[in-house]
Length: 127
Image: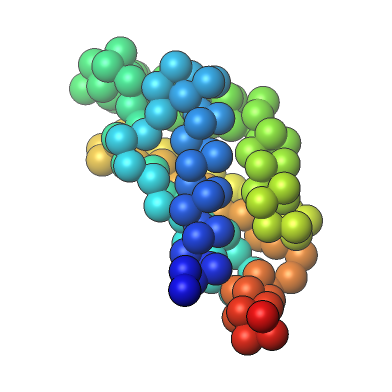
């Protein structure tokens, strides 16, 4: 039997990758979603575009890439929150994001309105 938590984590990862590909034209090389209590954490590896990789070689470029990615995240945060809500059935209370220009990783944290991990365990035990 497939673990419902792992299945949900994989489905959310796929949906977020698809959204990023449509938005930026390039998705991360790797994505993994973790459900921990009332948090959903999405970790993306290899998110920098070729242009961004060139820019981050200097301090001004690093700042520019972080600012641009932060602006994009603000513009589309409701879309990513909607994706998470649709897959989990929970309301997103808040979400946070950051990108590392050093490693090319990005992380998003979604704070949910309930302990999703406990809910999935209880649901699995009930089924």
